[in-house]
Amino acid sequence: MMPAPRTLELFYDVLSPYSWLGFEVLCRYKKLWNINLQLRPSLIAAIMKDSGNQPPALLPRKAQYLQNDIRLLGQHIQVPIQFPKDFFSVILEKGSLSAMRFLTAVNLEHPKMLEKVSRELWMRVWSRDEDISEPKSILAAAEKAGMSTEQAQGLLEKISTPKVKNELRDTTNAACKYGAFGLPVTVAHLDGQTHMLFGSDRMELLAHLLGEKWMGPVPPAINAKI
Image (tube, rainbow, N blue to C red; front, side, top):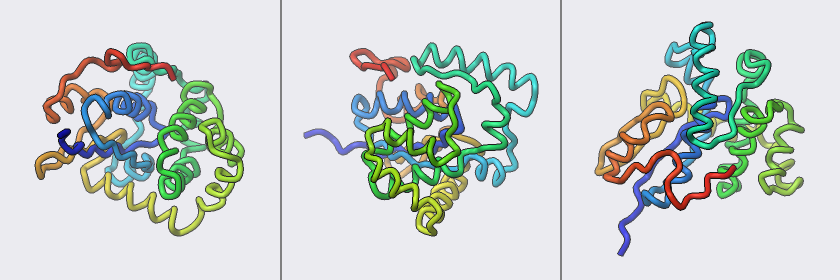
């Protein structure tokens, strides 16, 4: 008899490119490692504010490093990622509040669609340099992920409701309570203990905690095409 899957929570925001990288790797490993992967849409801006952290790209040298780092990691992990042309407008002005509220609504009402809709929002902002802040942009991502227009429109109409707002706030607060100061954050619940891992580059350590084998970001027999 197969043992019960171990629970991992992935706190993420589609504004975070490293969240996308970690998301794809964990999605590839969830069956190989027998994990119950719980996707937890969160708001990175609120986590930064709560922890007193600042976006790393505000420092020119870090910004230059990040562009090259993300490009190389995208090639290595096989994720079609690239910086938006107007990076600061996307990150600092437009933000991701509406997109993350929409993903929260998806998780509440159609949780099986959350992985696909999240991926399509990342594809828009971090691969095709497209908007994710306008309602029509969010609808386009949802429809491309396989939602009907009626489903997507119905969820979009709920993103300003107290239920959705409170759920996103609670999830973000949960990340903060685990000690988050940015995203992604992976929380592993193992043998009565909780382990919080920050970033997309702690997968080898996560494998160690799980007692599993790390086979690189693209494990054999996994179709990594996005």
